[in-house]
Image 1 (cartoon, helix red, strand yellow):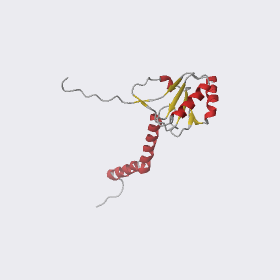
Image 2: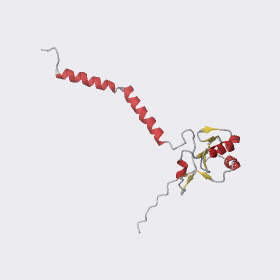
Image 3: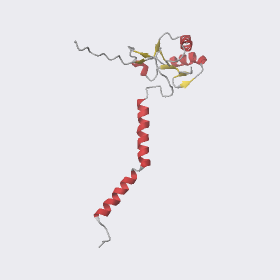
Image 4: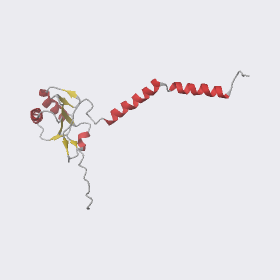
Length: 157
């Protein structure tokens, strides 16, 4: 015989389906997309988000913590030869003016140059000439540290 009215098992089933419906596929996808977006924002190095630059690999680079300041002057040369001042793409002839303007606003008298490892040397040299034209003598070339080779101890040691 089936009874009508409230039963604990029926109430539990209704409550369970209500909570599960909150976490349907679209809810899980939205939560996943949120965490992926947060990870990509947090893991992107400072000032690089708009540029596709593979830096030259070096075994023993010198660390430059000042390159992470808010007011650092960063010039980026991408693989295709595009020139960026900070996050903004710009023509090469405007670079000296922008550097001088950054100095007037109190930036450090040093330029951090990030050049793609596959960019032609002539483009890097031309950019260095433009930086020097702005009156800058201190230019830091940004590189990527390579992993040191693994050494295997010989069994005789």
